[in-house]
Amino acid sequence: MTGIIVLVVTAINTLFGVMLALYLVRATWLGRRIKQLLNSIVDLPFAVSPVIGGLMIVLLLGPSSIIGTFFEDIGFKVVYALPGMILATLFVTFPLMVREVMPVLQEIGAQQEEAASTLGAYSWYTFWHVTWPSIRWGVIYGVVLTVARSLGEFGAVLVVSGNIMNKTQTATTLVYQDVENFNVTAANGVALVLAAFSVGLLLLMEWAKKRKEVH
Image (cartoon, rainbow, N blue to C red):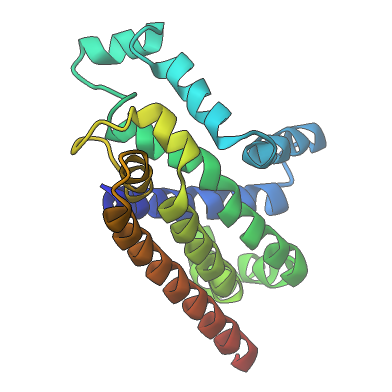
């Protein structure tokens, strides 16, 4: 379940994080106030505890809420199931991609993109051949940070998952349960695996930095 959450959250964050960063930096049709509002929403997970974020999801989409009841009536359970766990992880990780890509876009400016557009290039072509080569390392950093944060997220996921044994447990909530049950050996085993992943991600980050300096 941890692997599924990491894959889904990373894919969604990469797609929508890059899109939002582009809009916040390049979209001239967005007013200053709207951009300020969107920036505030992006930074919300930094200001709010993950536990509170998880509780907000439970209150909005839980079994006792109107929206949650509607989804359960059509056979789609959100809270205390995988979708709620994905939403909780998205809440705490979404700023990471946006905040990695935005400074790069601001640094490179829009001159090359405007030149490509003037020469008749389509927006999609301009993105892949002009914008993407400049931001790809920022995206890689964002992916690494998102994966690391998704692997280690505990508070928000614990609230929305209910920590149901063999149904809605991630690696971190499993460690929590094993510690609570004084099963220290099992907790240490899972924690060691998570630590190994974290070290691997740090090494990947350092490799990406060196590649960026070479280019």
